[in-house]
Image 1: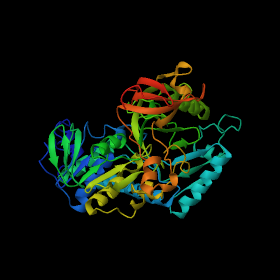
Image 2: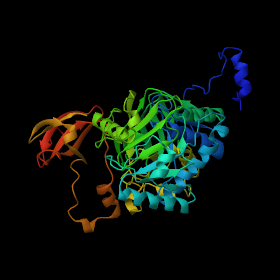
Image 3: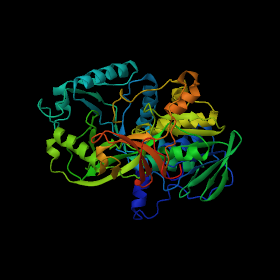
Image 4: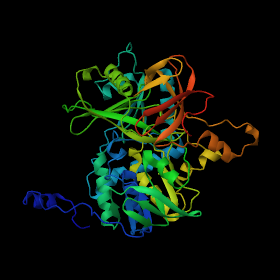
Length: 417
Length: 92
């Protein structure tokens, strides 16, 4: 690896006022043809390219991105990572990702600031208690660390939560996954981009796909704002815009794209050292290393590509946050934003071949794709390289909406991811 | 967040309404004759358009009536509102 990051390279560059660091990745012009093209330069797309090059020796490949890498949902999420999903297929998928997260900084030689600070899910009513206990048991059968906490244990683990029995959303208990946590989202995109680039992958930014060309049942290339590029294997990882790209290839997907919002506060001293999610009232909160509270809200109920979201959604979330954490009542919010999430009817992703030969889709991650980034890239790379799904993503094929074999995580994992 | 002109009540805030998704998806007349592919198409597949979309809304916190809206999903601008059963006012 050229230009390996280490304590020695840091010291060496300090002597030249950090002015001589090499570029982390090149800025190439697109070639006429590639062995494979990945459409979408977010975390999932870059990870796919990295694993295609590293594990499947496909180095004549490109990632095309209409904006800048990591500028979409990769840079807009609340960075929560966990794998405590109910169903076997989801548990397999998300825990595969979590296992890669645990060694990712070392593998990429890039600090993704993965922090296993634990994720706690609160129960506010009897049905929550039943559902979360059931989920805990299912998790443990699948080898995922999960424990049930009663109200006192919740209070002990996160003392700033208001556990008084007469509040609007009383805390009746919660589940805790200690291996779960957060990571620095931008670093994930940059780390994978640098890793892929060093293996020879061309990362082409400001290159919007305008059309997907087919020759009968075989995909043959893409029209882009930088000209026509040939390739017989195209993997689309375009999140909220997946349906737009599917439409270019004459396909329809079972997706609806909706704005999902998040917001951060002014930075304060350390006050919450874990991630607390409250699915029933749609509020989740953690604290970034800079000290900002990172708060996740819900999705709007209607299809929209506006990357804004409605004010009433934020209001509902903050109302719940203030009830649960009275200590935050005087915090000021600094920024609010939205990202467009593509939601499947069963709230599980699609990592799949399509009816068009050589065209693959990785989409439908909805409100919870960030946590799966490394696993999604690894499995999508396997699917593209072998033209066959890996056993961990076989259940997440597009045909499940025809066969009825859905992976229904909607109510099961509760709303927030 | 935007204002919707309910054909029965007039202009109200969007929070009074519930989105019913894509409009003009006709329920199959003979459900027993349908193949799995056709069921999947009816139940799950959506155009999910970025641009002008025809959709259903319900004034759930008002008159509780259903109606159709023509909205540009790229900027949330509403182009037309029309009642159930009426022809779409712009070319579909």
